[in-house]
Image (cartoon, rainbow over all chains, first blue to last red; front, side, top):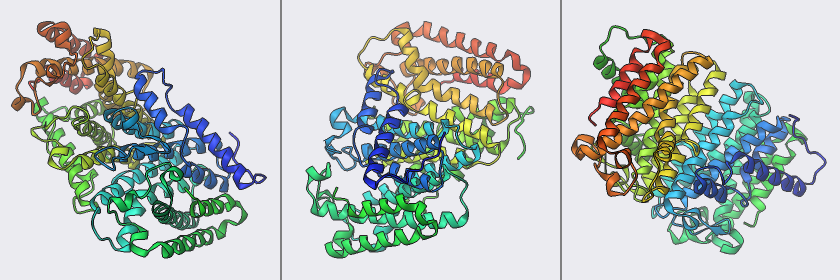
Amino acid sequence: MTAVVTPGLTFGDWMQATQAGVESALEQFLPASDVIPHKLHAAMRYALLGGGKRVRPLLVMAAGELFEADAAALARAACALEMIHVYSLVHDDMPCMDDDALRRGKPTVHVAYDEATALLVGDALQSQAFTILAEGAAIPPGRQMAMVRLLAQASGSSGMCGGQAIDLDSVGLSLSLQQLEQMHQLKTGALLRAAVILGALAGKDLEPADMASLDAYAKAVGLAFQVVDDVLDATADSATLGKTAGKDAAANKPTYVSILGLEPSKALAEQLRCDAHAALAPFGDKARRLRELADLVVQRKA
Amino acid sequence: MTAVVTPGLTFGDWMQATQAGVESALEQFLPASDVIPHKLHAAMRYALLGGGKRVRPLLVMAAGELFEADAAALARAACALEMIHVYSLVHDDMPCMDDDALRRGKPTVHVAYDEATALLVGDALQSQAFTILAEGAAIPPGRQMAMVRLLAQASGSSGMCGGQAIDLDSVGLSLSLQQLEQMHQLKTGALLRAAVILGALAGKDLEPADMASLDAYAKAVGLAFQVVDDVLDATADSATLGKTAGKDAAANKPTYVSILGLEPSKALAEQLRCDAHAALAPFGDKARRLRELADLVVQRKA
C-alpha cells in the first residue's frame, strides 16, 4: 500500500477527498444489508453512513500523513474510531440516556428502528471496530496490538464510557472548571487523542518526544472541541447543528458557557487553537493538516 | 509463567479451583470501586463478580490445558470472554430487551442501579474485554492478534449480537429446527467456540486438524448448552436457575422443547454430548477436562 501524502491539495479539497474516502471505507467495513440479520445490518449502516463531520477519521488521516503511514492501516484505524464514536452516539441518544430524537439531521436509531435494535447496533459497532482493526495485516503485529490496546483503553471506563458516566452523574451539580475539564478529557478527549495517536502509529513506532508533542496537540484540540460544542449548543439552532440545540442548558448540565460565560469561552477556544499549533512546532510543514484541523475544530459553525 | 496442567485433581476440585482462580483474576482485571467514576466501576463489579457458572472461562482453561498454555495468557482470555458474556446479559436484561429483574440470583443491573448505568456497564465491559486481551505480553503478538480478532468476530453482528438480533425478530414466529440452530450458533455458539479456540491459541498456533477437532467439539457443546437451557427453562424453577424460569414460553419464543418436545430434546442433548467426546478422540487423555465439561454442560441442573 502506498503512503498517504497530499501536499498539493487545498485544505477544503483534502477534507472532502478524505471524507469521501472514509465513507467508502466505512461502507466496505460494514456487512451488507442483505447479510443475516438484515435488520441489524441495515440499522448499523443507517447509524454509520451518510452523515457526520468525521472529525476523528480526519485526525487519523492528518496524523498518518505526518509519518507517511500505510494507507490501508490508516483506513482501518479511521473507520474503527468512527465506529466507536457512532456507537456511543446511538447509545447516548436512547431514552434512558439523553432521549434525543434527532442526530446528524436524521431520526435517531431508536426512533427510526426501535430501542432493542439501537442497543444492539451500538454493541455490534463496538465489536466491529475491534474486528476491522484486528483484521488488517499492513503493519507489524506488535504495533497493531498497540493500536488495539489504545483504542480499547480510550473507549472503556477510564476513557469515553467513564466520561459518559461522570456526565450522567453531574446533571444538576455545580462542577468546577477542573471537574468539567476532567469529564470532557474522558468523554471526548480520550477518543480524539486515540485518533491522533492511532494515525501516527499506523506510520511508525513513536519516540517519546513525538508522543509528547502529539499528546499536547490532542489535549488542546480535544478541549477546544468541547468548548466550541458548548458555545454552539448555546448559540446555534437545531437545523444548523443537525441535532437538538440548547439541550445542555435545558438538561441543567454544566458547560463551559455556564461556568465561564460566552465570550470567555470563545477566547479559551482560540487560546487552545494556539496551544495546538505550538505543540506541532517540532514537526514543521509535515503537520500542516493537523494545524488546519485545529483551525477547523475551533472555527466550525456546526 | 508456568503452564497449566492439573492431572491429579478430580473434576469437582479442578472446577472449584478454576472458578476461584477466575474470580480472583476478574477482580484484578476490573478497576476498583474507588477509582473514578465510582458508580460505574461499582456497577461493573456488581455485574461481573460473585456469581455465574463461568462456563466460558472453564472452557478456556480446559482447552489451554490440552496444549499446556501459558497461565497468564489463559487468565486474560478467560476473563475477556466472561466480560463479553456478562455485558451481553446486562444489556439483554434491560427493559427494551428481555426486561428481566433477576440474574444469577440477584437483582439485574438496571434494577440495582438504573438503566443508563446498565447501558454503560455493558459498553465498558466490552471495551475492558479487549483491553485485557490486548494488554497481555505473554505470547507472540501475531498469535495475540489472532485472539483479539477471534473474540471481536465472535462478539459482533456475525456472532453473538447477530444471534440476539435474530432472537428478537423471531418472537412469535414459527422457526424450523434449522433456523433455531442457526440462531443459537450465533447467539451462544460463537462465544463458546471462541472460548475453546482462545484457550488453545494461548498454547500454540493451531494446525488445521486441531482446529477442525476443536470446532466440532465446540459446535456440539454449544448446541447441547442451548438444548439443555431450553429443557431447564421448561422444567426447573427460578430459585434453582437463579433467573426467571419459563420466560421463553411466556415470551412465545421458539425453543428446542417447543419444536421437538421435552424427551426428544433430552435425547438430543445426550447425542451432542457423545458427539463432543468423539470430536476429542485425536487428543487422547490430554482432553480430559474438555470431556468432563461436555458432561457438565449436559448433566447440569441449573
